[in-house]
Image: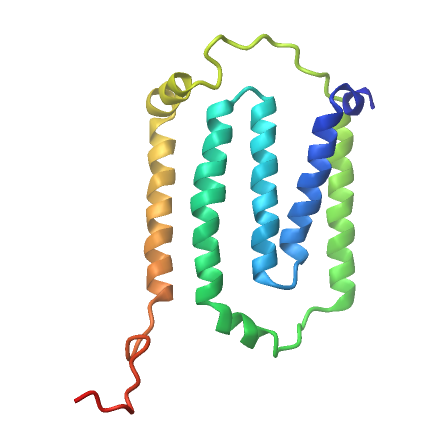
Length: 182
C-alpha cells in the first residue's frame, strides 16, 4: 500500500481516468461519451507528462484529443438516426448473464490489482534524451519500423471502411426530388 502514497497525484489521476472511462461506456448520449473520452485523453496526457515524455503528451492532445475525437464526433452526428432507431428496441440480454459478467470483471480487476500491489517501484535513472523527439524518432524508424507501418496501414483500412459505411445512396443531401429546378 505504500505505492499509493508515494505520488498522490497519480492516484487522483488514476481515479479520474477510471471514472471518465466508465463515463464513456455508461453515458446514455453519444456526445456525452465523446466528452468523457476527451477527459480520458487529457488524463492520459498528464500521465505522459509525469513520465517525462513531453512529446508524447503533446501529441496525445493534438492528435487524439484534437483529430481523432473530431472524427468520432463526426461519426456520431453521421449515424445519429441509427442511434435513435436503436433506442426503440428492447435489449435481449439475460439479467443473470449481465450479473455474472460484471462479477467476473470485478474479480479479474481484483486479481490484477493484487498483482500490481506487489511490484516494487522502479528507481531507474532515465537517459538524457528520454522522451525527446529525436529518441522517439530513432525508436519508431529504426527499431520499430515494421510495426509502425502496420499501424498506419490499419488506420488507412479503417478510414476507407468508414467512408464506405458512411456513404449514402440516392439523391445528394439538400436536393429535393419533388421540386422542379428548371
